[in-house]
Image (tube, rainbow, N blue to C red; front, top):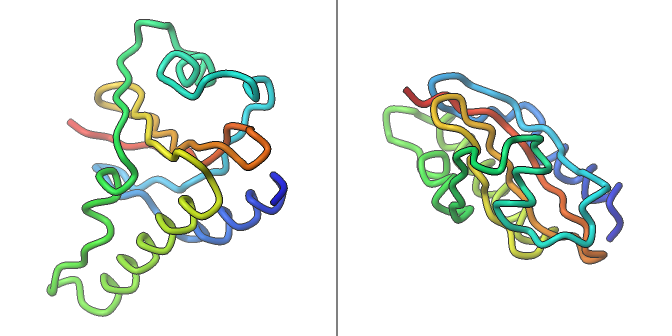
Length: 134
């Protein structure tokens, strides 16, 4: 599967979906061409995000990152159930399209979240979104 097809599928999976935190932010496709042969780790991700090497970054598993979005509470009704299902489908789609998917949380209060993995061709790509946690 080529990069354009991965981009299309991820955009379809996130269309109208917002990352919920103290602000609700959209998901955007993320790809940096200059990092194809780099290791996918904190140092590379900080370079990709144009952040200093000592900037705070936390790596979390995909399921942990989406844990509050994939479970609807009864008071959220049908809309909450549908949204939780979309987040479950997004998580599944990311695992289907990319290898070794992890979430890199960059920053402390205003957090840039990069959900990254490798394409079959070895390129680093995924999604980015913002979170606010005070």
